[in-house]
Length: 247
Image (tube, rainbow, N blue to C red; front, side, top):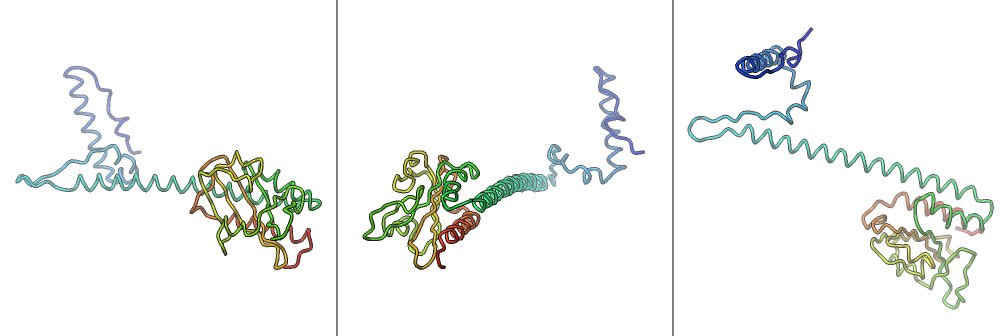
């Protein structure tokens, strides 16, 4: 059985005997390493605490070995940090995906259209950990701005294009002040938002799904929008079915 250098080395004492013990300990460690040349390969973490010797040719020219080792250590630390960041991001994405799937199932369980709207604007806030969820529908040019259904916010004509941009599907904004024309009484809570265009068919008015959070960085430009798009498609399909709207 291989002998561990730490087990083989006696405890260091004081005085001349202690110095001899230290020399003996170092000698045994050196012997162990010579007998086990793959020891550092099997324990690469020790490279982080060992200092390699520098070498020179005696003419003032230094060997770059130590600098190369230090660079490799820094590179390894950076890769480790990057890996840990990817793990955290991956876990966050899985958590968000699970929440959106739970929200979609909750919408599919609605018993009628009014229950669907209540689930969308109330229950989904809890499931998705948001502070406000609103469905808004643009009114006709000569309309009277009455809500098309209880819990649905009336929007002025062409408002979705102004908010998101013509032909655009989603806009994410961070560090904003919630707009009462979108979020109503909950506007004071909103500091970041996701605005998603809803289309119910060629004969239906343009609509908006607005998600608001009090965390100013919950929604940020540049974030992935695949899950938000999926949720919007579920909302569109469900409303189209409840109201028997043609595609």
